[in-house]
Image (cartoon, rainbow, N blue to C red):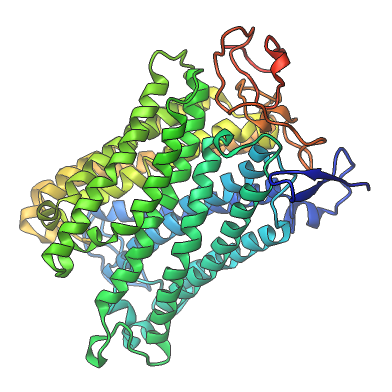
Length: 594
């Protein structure tokens, strides 16, 4: 098997492509212990979708309890015989449900979907590389994440059940040795996230190195597609934020096991230090979860409107500004912790300032849509929904940035609505947009567009019926992590709204079965995908669907940016990055013309 050296990125950097050869790898090397970034991206996809299903199932239990509350007669480890309709969950297990729902959704579903899946799928193809800079490290990243997820799942089956200290695991509850001795699940929670942190660091190092050193000739920084810019900045955030969380988790584990007192007040520990360490990681984590979604939405919106992205450079600068400002706003999660008022005012001001680059991106997306030749295909519908949901979540965040307002709504369902509008309505709609958009490229089949649109409509409607009323619940005083609202007289009038939310949540979960069926059915029965079904410009659409091992037979040369849609003087309304300038009136790519 011959290999040829190819100059990429910086003139002194080389990598090796393996053009047009028979793939003679064994099944294990090809599909299990693969070093091919595309296969690893698909592995992350199936793992993440599994944990998304787990986290969603836990959410259904939570909403069942809140929609039809009651306390069952104890009759088992977790579930009991209900005295009345509803009330099938014991209070102790309910706390574990809330904790593990947040943990699975954030760390094992949304984060690997956005970073693990799209990072692996897109980075080498978008920059014109044969693979990641460190293929074996890439494989190790996935196979480190898998045991982390299994450890977290195992915590349901140990003495005392899974962690019940909340997904933030605030000390001193999570640090008390007596508590963690009874609930082995709290220790496993720490161990799982420590292991997952190492997997994330491996991926971040790989992403940064690949983007910096392995870009094709002509692929300058300002010709990178926006998903790559977003993933590059996200990888830097991961590299800087994850070690902070890992250090805090190790200290918490030591408090639980070997008698240290980092967070235990009786022996001089400081529970507030856990909050500072957790949220110093936690707020950059919000942007780890949202920046890749912004990049995906930008790609799809430009393609679906058949226009260049409005203000490309400002979009890039906004991504960088959001990442920088994300490090100095963590204290807005702690306005109720008794911090100095002057320090609180500083965090309040910085939080309001971070809304500016976010608003720039929103206006740029609207500018891209304005007077565009909009194609309402399934990816485009989800990308537009992402913008709408992100705006709602961002506006509610502005309220919480004000210390006096936050003191009133802190730990209420207003906060639950906010975080879900950003991380569910924002991230998940972008994930759906990305999967529908790149599915044909990586599986060689088209997902059914009718089922895709039905899934979108049902998800959009029921999602808003679930989470928008939560703003009202919060303003009326309903607390987070509450087990039985009927135990509080002032919350009893809100029960009809809770029931509506729970019915909508169950229907929202059922709507995802359409996506699952469409995803799995299309793998075998879907219409065979052309190489460029969306008439897109970036480099991956010049390859067959799915791309071969090694990606490019010859290293592409990049002549322009990724969003050259509707260029004057061309027979078609798109201009691929790798098409030479003398192909001005070229065309003839496969796909549906605009």
